[in-house]
Image (tube, rainbow, N blue to C red; front, side):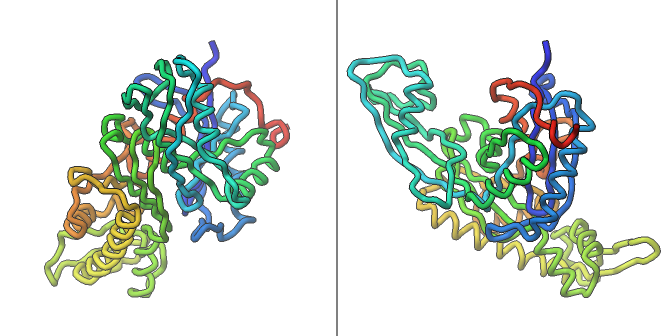
Length: 382
């Protein structure tokens, strides 16, 4: 029996990753093709260089194709939080008599629960926070239950058509027949948090290179989401400007940071070829602290803006590659926000870093979809 192979594209704020994979043993992935390409990225809802974006997507697909013999006809694209917004609705439907809830009734609830009137957005995901039956029982999944009334707290993820139109047009030029857009933050939440954790509420901050997405999660849904311009690239830029150094040296310096260093005579040493650079740890850390405080201010604003009472026991879960590798960052954020802060990453061999979260989550979601006929690269790879 032929295994289901899926192809996904994870669009980050500094790089694009494409992968073709099959399900492996113990919830692992068998990667059949892989490509990761850097690019200019995006901010405030727009790509910096659309021509470069098209070229990078084409390169990624070519490299994935060459490393894989059987590719699904549908490409799953992870949409960054920067391009999405969440609408929360309470809705119910009633039946003439008690009936067993199937996917059909559930879809009827979603279809009638919210009508999108904006021409700027399209719905890419819809999921339930909690459902209530006619006997007032609450359930995370009503399918299979018997009831005359189905009530739900429903979450709809809307995506800016600028993103879907841009990516779809470029992928179709590459010969892709079908594109499925998936909320990146939702995929991460479903993958990184256990169901019982989501039922109690979870808070996820995906800190990237240029942008950050803050999501409040309940059940199988995002109940609040907001993106803002902040990421590891801001630190790189601050080092570049303050120390008058090249960005590649600044990036190496950022990865040396240890916020526990405080003595006035301690330094960071960076070796680049035949050159050695020395930077005062006290000043470097001062810049990092100031930058992390800016992140904390944005997170505080989002949590207040959400208007949800987050239980005190709920930690702030941080993923993504923006700050997760900075030693001492988690402790500083925890003290600044008076919250428990944890770092989340996939628990997979060779894919166990916070930078892997979005790709692993997208693969997991795509592999859970129905198997489809194999073939979509015929235009690009004749």
